[in-house]
Image (cartoon, rainbow, N blue to C red; front, top):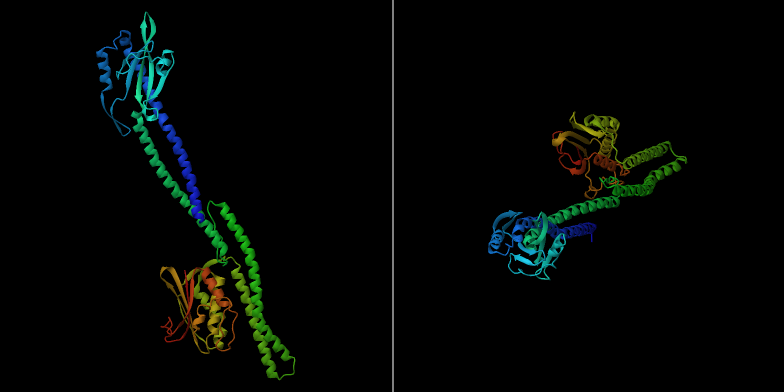
Length: 487
């Protein structure tokens, strides 16, 4: 089971249990609260009726047909009241009156007249001067069949003294307030459903956020490429601490692996020129003709230059890979920078009689790190010179594209790159033999180029072309084209 499902399940379970407990507790309070309101109303009504019927009780008029007719008309009065979306059409109450001994002298239902109610709580407590109330079920097993009775004492002034002459009790079936209770329960249920769905949705968002954040940390931990930045999470200090701990551990592991890889590669790359220098030096110890001595000395110088170039490029690659990609951006005129690089390579261009054709947009400006862009252009030009024959052509085009993008094309006339090598030329330490000398380079230059271009959020590709993209300068050439696009 995925962590997303687990988090969502436990969040949802906690929310559902909380809602169930709240709903259960609230539901247990609905009925008592409604009945408390009903009881309050009945208590007021009982005392009002007790005042109204006091004289009739004293004069023994409650047993007359006229009194009963008056009560029945009041109880049978038709209503048309919409109370909280419930249409109430009739009065659901009953009345009985007892004398001072608890004997029923009037019953609106006509079934209890003459019975002794002195032991019923509503009458018994009222006759003792207390608050009289009782609730009696019509069916013992059905709580909704109960009727609540609220009693009030009937006082009448006789010889300047208040005398208790009887009790009036008003009864109201609990079933008459059930629609209001049911409506409250229905509303509570609907709201609970909405709250549950909303809570589950929010729980899903939280669970997804946690899963996504953990996945980011996991992917960061798994990815060993140095281009990845440490993920940062808002309002999640614990995840940031985990990511930072992984970052620290990763740096230590990478440093160790990088040093090991660096030493192995450097040892391998230095072995060939050092062997050549050693062999030439041993031969120079012998008595050789001047011409041979000069040849071996030239060979030693060439291999020394190769060693220096190799060390310089290894240092550049190390600086690039371990710099955490902090570029010093500034406004750079690419056309001027290309011209400076060409001036630095003027002697090499002249020695090989290379013709360099330019099509540069003089106002092609961009935000870039001047040092690394210059190194990139120098490496690309070195590579173009290495693979160009005597009297070949190098074409460079620089212009603006739509959406403020910059396009740079560098073409060198020469043999095509083998198909198997097209996808590997930018890999570190991969190189091809030069057409003339058949020697291989360190394979670092183009790797630096690609990393610099990607750090500037650009794209680079290389392809074999028959008719170059700068046809208006020099059509019908065969060679290799490097395409660069920068923002």
